[in-house]
Structures are given as structure tokens and as C-alpha cells.
Image (cartoon, rainbow, N blue to C red):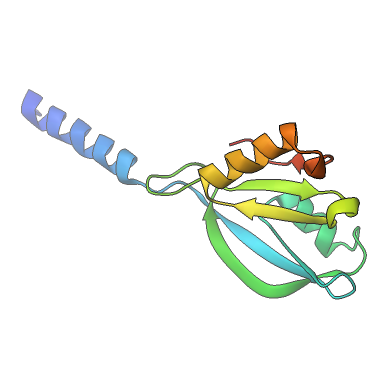
Length: 123
């Protein structure tokens, strides 16, 4: 029979493993559009399927992928993603800097040059 101390040690060890366990990883895939000379990255399965399936003409995988975190993890910053409208560049802006994300959000509210920008992430 287990002692109370053994049970507590087991519970603490399980909690330590749960806390130390990394957040689930997801593969981020890079795409390139030669006609636009634009790159795009996404971890989202629906976007990957649409791009791989030809829904957006001209985009192809570059072969570059990396693992990102699907949820916040200790020692990391969430990434914000903004859609830049065609009149301002027809692109996306990504940043893992919370300050930089906040600056863009503020400019979207106050600077007419940022009209039409869309935040595609909620961090």
C-alpha cells in the first residue's frame, strides 16, 4: 500500500511533468507566389489545404517548414498576423513582438494609412 508521502510525490511529479511539457507543436508551411514576389506562411490546416489545392492561383510550397506552438508556451511570444489590403501592398505582416503588434493595432485605429488592415489573429 502506498504511503501518503508516496502519493504526494507521485502527484507532484505528475504535475511537474504537466507543467514542463511543451505546448503542442504545429507545422508552419511557407508558400511563394512568383508573380507577386510574395511569401506567405501558415500553420492553419484550412489555409494549407486551399493553397495546396490551387484555390489561390500562383502559390506553391517553397519546401521550407518549421514547428511552431499551437498554444502559448513558456518563454515564447504569440505571433500576430495582419492582412494588408491591396491598396497598401496586398500582403501580410507577422510579428512575435507584443509591442510591435500593439503598435500596428493602435495605428489601425488612428492612422488612415492603415485603413483596411485586418488582424487575422487574436493574441
